[in-house]
Image 1 (cartoon, rainbow, N blue to C red):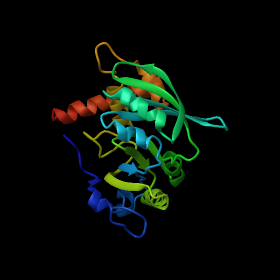
Image 2 (cartoon, rainbow, N blue to C red):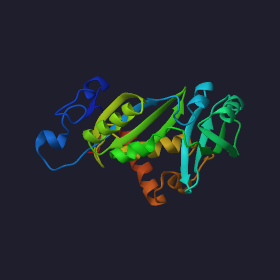
Image 3 (spheres, rainbow, N blue to C red):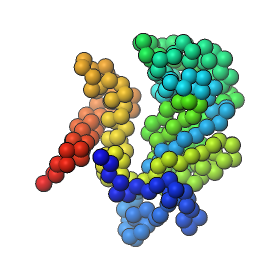
Length: 252
């Protein structure tokens, strides 16, 4: 079940308003109140020189998620997790990928591997432009030669700026979903806030709900850069929202 109260389709959202960007005015703009809401988006980005594009295109069943980027002033090191069935084929393509070099396997299971790679200077990057425009990436994954980005922008103008930067760099930009959100009310799945949705998606992906658990709550918190207490609250409140929404239960 999905709460679509504030959502707009990609077609509606793609219409500029007042030269600022996408979709209708935010709830605060429409009512004249001072309540601020940010913009949640799902984007699909592609370009031949985006990091690891050739590698993820060669193994369509493998999904790649960036975990950490470190820049020491002389090189940029990226930690990624690759999950899928054709990891040997993926690794062969990784060795030939011109956007990265010096790959090192940090951890592995039968269906996933964690790599550290050095990013080439010529590689096209997504997140610096996104952050510079006034956004933050909540989740990024690469599959079938494309990067799927779940992000939050401070305004329509910020999203427009990011799209303009993508256009200037010939990055293909597709808007799949757009909605207004705030810290407490989000038009995401089951009415989850953006933080709750990312917490639950990460917990599910990392095996937190498996028996036995594949990851601890403290380790999940570390992945998202938040405290264990905050992680616990997001999971508990998110699960409460999902159960209430799916079973049609009322808080009253």
